[in-house]
Length: 144
Image 1 (tube, rainbow, N blue to C red):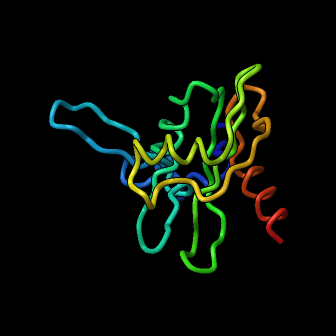
Image 2 (tube, rainbow, N blue to C red; image 1 turned 30 degrees about the vertical axis):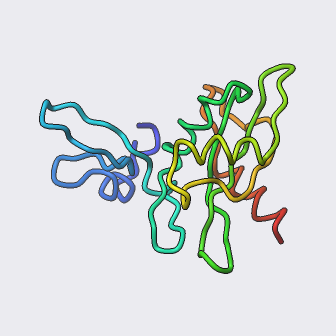
């Protein structure tokens, strides 16, 4: 909450009608369980379809060669945005883009399958959270 201390403007924007607006999108189930689907800023809109980066990441994490995965949007001339998967492999593991695409095809709708892959370590905060803003910036720079 440090970002809101003595910052009335940020506090007004984040807190409305008794709610703290985190930017998380979720589903409230009838039993009261809240399932987080994604962060609003991480939703990929490809050809008018919404793609949850978390859903794609969950599938990639199930692949036996994948240690870590993060999915971000990159611009695409035809679709507006497409998913880019950044993958860190398990030690000694090998996999290529075609194998990951085939694996994703078995678990995801076609439009949700990453169109691009990068194999790299994922940038993290000191607490271990993946820094997607850095991945987006690196992707934009490499596509330019």
